[in-house]
Image (cartoon, rainbow, N blue to C red; front, side, top):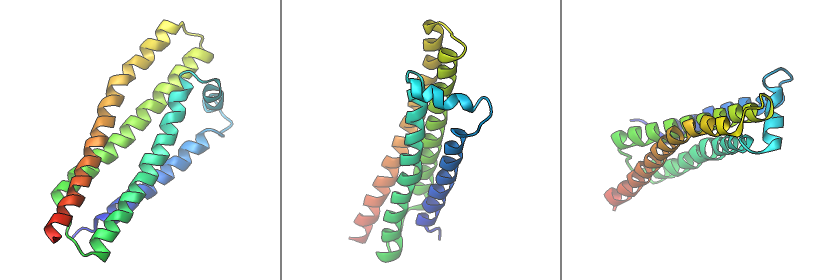
Length: 163
């Protein structure tokens, strides 16, 4: 039997490690990494990068840690069964959605910021560059939301089965 709190805890650890790596990218003294702080500091497309960074830390690391804690209570302390099929689907959607949307938003922000502040692209080209990422980011963020909804429903069904 899979103890899902361990799966989510390991996902939180993996996201924390990636968050540390993402943080280190800000301070690496080699191009193109030296551009990141300037891109974020100047705003505009750099805000996309900064939002992606914080979302990955908050939703990725902390979000999966909170779900892991709730699952620990359900599985270990309350000894309730969690449906494996539903959790595989929920976890897969949530993890893939959070990871993909954060990475795409970060890449879009970094590329857009570089195009604006260092390559001096016209604004219309920067808008086109960022626009190409909007739909894929929205789809993967929606995928993450569906995953979390499946997880919540699975929690509630385990409560109903106990009851």
